[in-house]
Image (cartoon, rainbow, N blue to C red):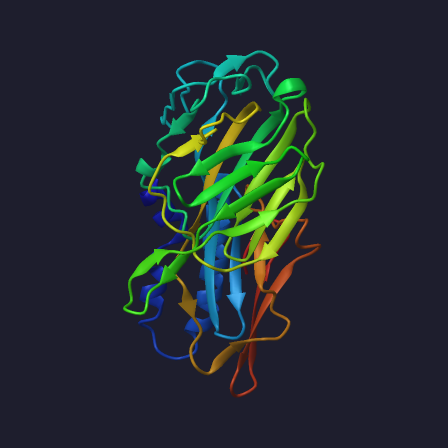
Length: 320
C-alpha cells in the first residue's frame, strides 16, 4: 500500500524539480501537485485534493485511502483488506443495515470487538482520517448512550441517551526539546436527537488537517476548524470498548486515512495570485468535485517582474 501511494503521489519528483534553477520550475510544481492529487483519485477511486497556501507559497497533494472495511456477515469478522477482528462479545443479528449486523445490545460487560488496524503500515493517521459506519441505537430497556468506538488513544466516538454524538481525536504536540507527545482531546459534539433509537443512521467522523466534522446521513451536524496533526495509532480499533457494552447494532464499517505527498514551495520571486483557491478537490475517479467547484479551476502565478502564468484544471480533472 505505501509503495502504491508513493507512486501515485510522485514522491521524490518534487525534490528533483527543486534542483532546477530559476522560475521555470514554478508552473511545473503546481502542475505536479494537481496531477498527483488527480492520480490518487483515479488510482484509489477515492477523493483527493491539492492545497495551496498563498501566505507561505507552499502546496501539497493528499488523498483518502481506505485501509479497512467490515460488513459483519460472519463470525470470522474478516475485513476486505485481510484484517480480521477479534471479538470477546457482540453477536451477529439479522436486520442489519445491509444483511446482518453486529449487535452489543444486551451483551455482558466488556463485550467488544478489536480490529488490529494499527499493524498495517498504511495506517497513518497524522494527516487525517474518515471513519464511516451505520448504527442503530437500541430502544426499550436497552436505550441509552455509551462508547461506540476508540482507536487506541487517538480517536473516539460516544453516543448519548438524548441522541447526540461526541467525537474526539488526540493531537500530536511538539515538546520544547523537539520530541512529540499526545495532547489533550479535541472534541466535537452534535445537538440532541441526531440519532433515533431503533432507527439506522449513517455516521461519519472525518478530519483532514483543516476541518473536523461529524456527519449523520451525509449531513454535517457539527464541525470545527483545526489543523493539528493526529497522534499515531498505538492500539487496535475497538468497537464497544468500554466496560458497559454500547447499546445498539452497527454495520458497514469503513476506515480510511489521509495520505499526503511531499510539500512543494514556490521560488522566492513567485507567488500565488489572490484568485488562487485554497484547495482543488477531485472526486473519486479523477474529475473535479462538483460540490466544491462549479466549473474549471485556475491556479495563477505572479512573478516579480509582473508576468503571470496559469495552470488550468478542467471539469474532468485534466491539468493543462
